[in-house]
Image (cartoon, rainbow, N blue to C red; front, side, top):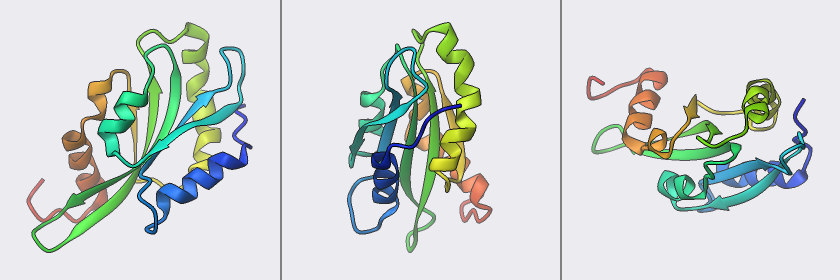
Length: 144
């Protein structure tokens, strides 16, 4: 069971969801290699590009991000994604626990449209994620 009780996690979650702040992502990492306690590592306002730079290939992490995209010339949508990051150099035991811990993280980061599994930074390119969000959203105005 993952420990997501740190109040900073909930504060950052609400900050990412708020329309009144520029914060559009947060990153949770394990306190240590042997710990099941997740802590808020960082937040940012630079979108998925900035989030990709914050990820560490030797870690397993969870991220929550706001993605904004245009449906047509008149409208914009904002959707939220949950990223489950397992870096290429992540230790085997941590990889094994991440799927079990995902359920606990989903209790803390409750509202999201899609879950994005990521093994390399290229998995977090914005365009393919927007395509998935459009499909998940049901209303596609450009036939995607």
